[in-house]
Image (cartoon, rainbow, N blue to C red; front, side):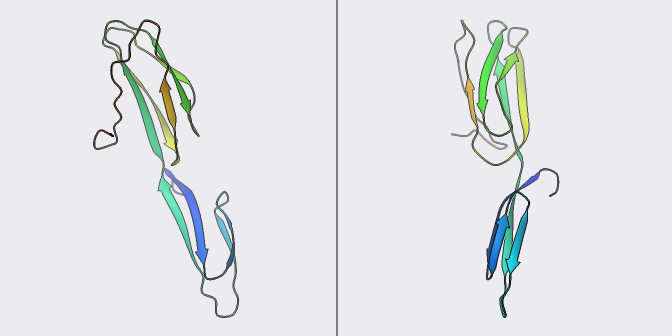
Length: 121
């Protein structure tokens, strides 16, 4: 598999097949006259970037992150108006849950989700 890609599925028709996505194999049993077609579905790996802007001071902002390849983390701003971020890269397609736990004495002002082109509603 080329770097930055992941195998997400294998489907075969026209013959008996034993499919193993983990190893990336399809073992086919052809009978007389069978014509098998196998499709290997690939997807590019993605990334998630979480950022914080602290207005009115600096602090440590903890987050919970659930999903394959992510985990709990904190972002630390060091100045008023400071911007910091963390990127989780090489992520397979799937569902990821990121929860900002907030810091004592701070109020969450805004949460914005963006893809490469525009804001996600």
